[in-house]
Length: 405
Image (cartoon, rainbow, N blue to C red; front, side, top):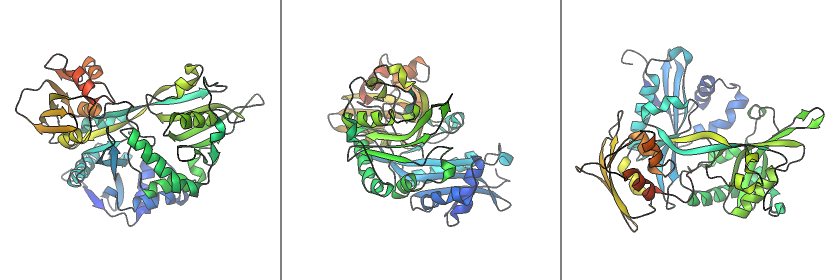
């Protein structure tokens, strides 16, 4: 990198040029119609953009939203929402991604962000930068008919116009964030794009976006892809997001999307691993569940990240973190008593040692330490230390973010 182009932080005044570079590197539609809906987000104050130029052209790009993430105990902590990472095929293996990652994570630290979060298009890339799975997900492919075990009154569900949803749905989402850890904040520009923008290039041959809600309690966004099989209807419902804050509203919304005329299947991705849907069905195999894309986290301030959350039990733990690319290596003492949490460096011998990506995995209770121990991802120095981690970080509901950023 010393003799080649270097990353620079830019103000996205010409957001169109940056957006076009992003979609080019993701092999997506480069037309203005595709790009225009993204521009308000890129110009927002909480969006940070890094690029590498070669001969004036953007050959690598990196973005980060200034966000916060919900924590066990209903608190939040500032994080960097990493997005739009791409390198030109003609400039790979020159250290451009590493240079951008280093510069952008340094900026996140300066902004007081305790972690960086991302969804990975190629998951193998980010482990070497210290990212670990913090919130696993599942996907469903439901086959109709899919009878529900204990149906609720689906008349609770009603349609809603995009403008009205923009006024009320952010409040429902914030209620969800108070119930579940791992849910990142969404600014107005993101909500506006998700609800008001819907160019045909985004639809993959399906309908315009449909919106349904149980007022004040939950909502669903979905499309319908028309299809037929030997003259019979065989459409597919594509659920992009379904959120509810109480069990009846959630059941009603699932019944709604699973019983739409002229369809035979329902596809819903990015669901929490403890999703209620399989248990709502009379036959849980009808859910067709499989592993989905996880949310990854890179801890930038181990002590702050673990101090900010609440814990399921009182106790202490001395753990060592090994960080090969940044400065978070060290031994930490976690002390939990009633509502008081303290995390500080210590010279004491650790009871468990884990790489920084594994520390991210156990941070919000999304991955069990005992599972990681069995996979030889962490090392116990005191028998039962991994089980003690699991008891401390246990959560009632799995961490989950319902949308990719």
